[in-house]
Length: 96
Ligand SMILES: [Ca+2]
Ligand SMILES: [Ca+2]
Image (cartoon, rainbow, N blue to C red; front, side, top):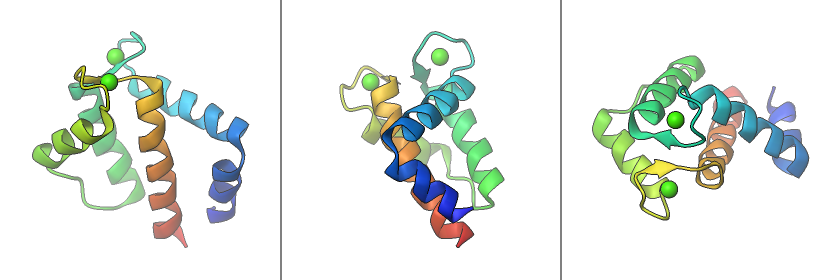
């Protein structure tokens, strides 16, 4: 599993594909932006799938704020990519 993640992280095309995929999963209303409620719902699902404690709503909104570099209150795919990369690295740590 962790080798697979390494491959994704080291392969820009694969990473892009993964980002697209996760983004479309999280973008429930398909408007090409992840808003706060979509991000919160998505993050809670991912954390419970990985098996690490689900962050509080407060932590989620802080994290969202960090990722939202242009401060428009939602995440576009470029901002979301930063999160996906972090999540893959986290997943790698917990599964190795
Ligand atoms: Ca959306
Ligand atoms: Ca944004």
